[in-house]
Image (tube, rainbow, N blue to C red; front, top):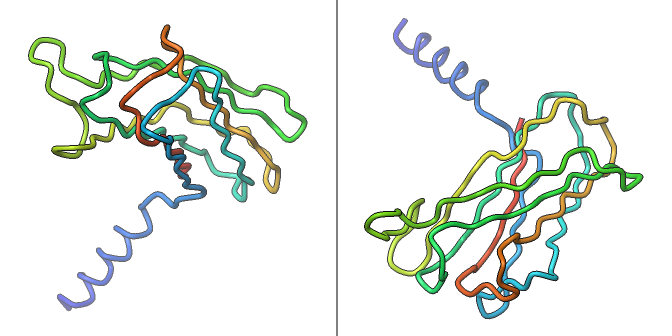
Length: 151
């Protein structure tokens, strides 16, 4: 009887987990992101379910600011903009200056769900563009940026 309850609970737990639809990282050469560099993620939607877009930023102590602004655009297969927005990440604690997010010593990762969409067509190609929106042309201390899409 206990085994049956355990199996039922595990089945319920795993059926409620989000499924990853897409996941990819872009690594910056020499930990520098230039303002004229848009990062492009191309993916194909395979589900009718609501999608959650999570953007992950990997950075180190060479990053010169406490926050980070990024802009994104989601485009359909005809290159029409579906959604576009600027997002702020708080990377370092304001008062004491320690890094926020996960990680330790060299690199830290800040994750954020930045978009939820339920109006995407199944079996359609999409493009997700990301660029930094800071005032400096050259940002030091940015190692990677990643996009993961779950339902």
